[in-house]
Length: 210
Image (cartoon, helix red, strand yellow):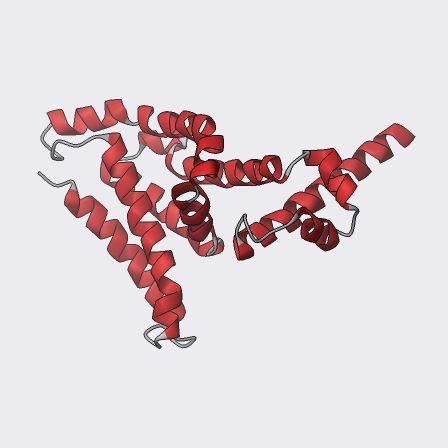
């Protein structure tokens, strides 16, 4: 019984460290977040953070890969594959948009730590490539079928995935500026975001027409 309690406590502390580190990485970025700060936020010693994750790089990689996996999960769900193609694109784009809406700092993590930070890009490359390959390979047959029938123009899964990602992520990167200059306010924020979601879906579907 005691072993089970110890394991439960260990898992609880590990989860708390991950949650605190994720919050700090999202708010401050990798370079401005220290292991000391993570330990303080989690209510434990720095030695305990090192015990679970060894280095800040390992801790960040675990969080980033988890978030990127959430992104991949938005666009590779097998149950979507029985949907008509247009509906499939709508559902997956909508799911990705909702993920970003629930994690508005996530686009900044993608941009600053994966695109801008070359060291992190190298560290994460193999796992990210593997996840992206999974995301693009599952849809290839369906896209070929749609092209051969003449229902969509010539394209590929990677182009569609990149269009989804870039349109959704760019919106949430620009959103704080729109709020700062008063174009998006508390009064119209919810309606504006919902409208933008539908516009992105329409744009992607329209871009596939022959």
